Image (cartoon, rainbow, N blue to C red; front, side, top):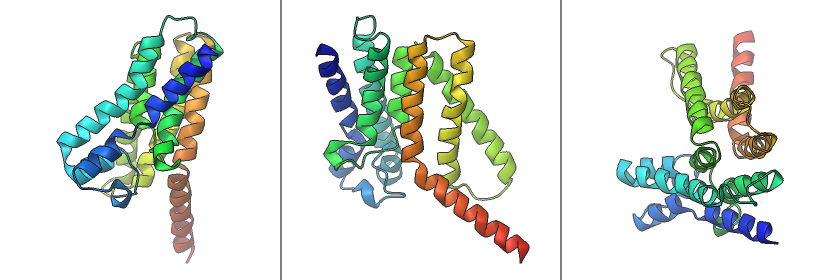
Length: 209
């Protein structure tokens, strides 16, 4: 029962939509900004870098602090760690405060990974994303940047993270956290995949004509 209560608390922490609420305080409804994602990036676009950075920090902390608080306890072991670590990510992605329409869970994911691996996996994920972004820019040359490609990089980067986790000999429960995080990111970025695939098929059709 205590594990269930702590998991619910971690989910509630993740579900607090700070970026969305900061946007409303600044008279910006993020559901009408960019792709409509109620996250820190759209807050940055709508209200400037100061509020954007505040949103990123708060979204990070709502994943980081609960896991940091519980680290070393009996609850944060084995399958308990999986439940506790995935809960804030799921809370952000499917926030009850927004009727299940939460954000894409990137900053909160970094917070969770920072807490459970002493920043190691979070830094590795950041390095992977930086490398993918550099490769993407090279492949696109001078072409326009797309939100779809950023979404693809987030998911592909997470798909590659187990290589680091395996090399670092992290415990099996960490792989369970990764699986839960990966499934949520795939779900939240499914529109990016669909849009990218649709544009690719159109491009192939144009090339054939």
